[in-house]
Image (tube, rainbow over all chains, first blue to last red; front, side):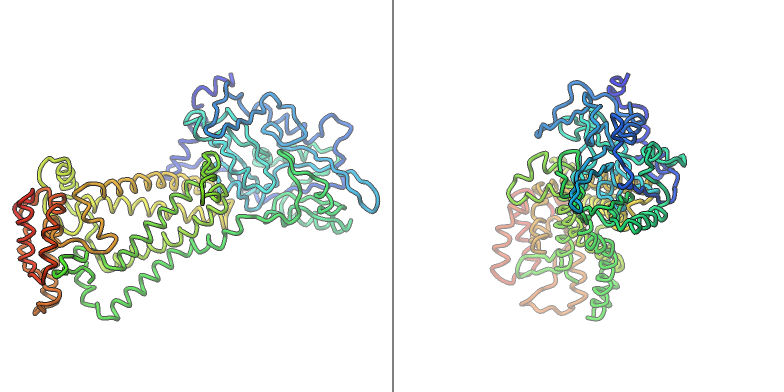
Length: 336
Length: 294
């Protein structure tokens, strides 16, 4: 059945692309755009409470995430078209059960680290998923706007229009999005030369948010280590909790600010030192910069460019008039 | 007024310094925008463009975005300057006129050897049509680009409909811009158009070429120069005393004029010959080949 879906452009894909094109013509509003404009939201992950669900085979947050997202990715075509000239195929279809790293089938995992603090060894469990950044480069520079940040704070990849070029992964400081080759719209265009699948990551359960529910991982956490709510409240709560334990916050400044705040009683510098950055297992570099911020100055200059051009034209016209071209200006326009 | 007949040099000033600066600032920044726009697609690394000398940066999206923005400042400012500076002065030379579509068909037929070319003003009818096409694409690129930049800098959670509109508009006009650029280059390759190429580099074209192919323009220039210099000095720039062949046909002017130009120019530059004489010279030279009825 799923295989069948891949044989032709599905009706949904057709409708979405049509909606995009119609939007170009100003004719309609895509459904996603009508999304509930919830107030801005955020998540607090309290590392002093997370115990990694060591009594379970898979942590509760990971397990529920896998369950609710199961079957959302169609089976890849077989064989998966070999991209040209670089032949990197990423296929996780046969390894969907992997739960200890980010994959196209696993949007959250719990990272266990052991830090030395005050001469004692301490285990810390860190649920890792997309941070849902305030100004996410992964979304803003997606060439097809397949990745978008909604007003409620969720950064969501539209798997029906994503080409799997992995640009979002390249610009993410944590390389969160993961690719599944052999699925998606690219199969219907130039599968060997353009695109390579679909990128997947946590969407903050955006559909649940729109239904005024909380993300599934938050609801499933037996320790109440995750709290989701209005951004202002979550930011205040994080400060309050960090203040009480003289702890630390991660995610407030990182990558220009995010909608995910970690609170810990151990400095994140120490936590990060124990981490080895690997595919699907990001580190927690403190104060990681939003690289796109480097371009904001020139971006503002671009926005000012029309005014610059018009001002220059005004100065030019004035100069021409002032230097005696009054009569010329009146009569020469005909055939220039 | 920058347009001028330089009879002693056998040249006509077709574009002033300002127009040249406008053209080249838009053209060069436009090319950089095309290139860096392509690098905004995930292709530089995939296609080993990053391995090419001098293009290692092409795989870094932030660096190529930086260059894209820098070029867009020039592109947008120059385009707005062009629009307002010439628009306010009411310059209409590049605005399509009634009958341009029909005339363009005749010109295209003449390129294919099917019939003679009609006499032209400064610009060919298809140049006027192409100008409007290119300008429309540029306007779409600029509007959609500005929305995208605003989103990048200030409003990452901008309404998704607007984002999709701007993105698709930018992508579609990007493709149209490539096609327009290729069309522009293709037009230059056509033999009759080649004498115009020097005009966009130096601002000047050969007088004999202009007389053959743009007689209506030369007639206008002659009239205007007469108005400006009722008593011209003989030894410098002289008003033209050519009977511009407005109503006559000019056949296969470009190639023929090119071929004839050596003769024409050598005579022209040998002294301050009056333009009328040059016109005759050019005509005579052209008559030897294919130019008729000038």
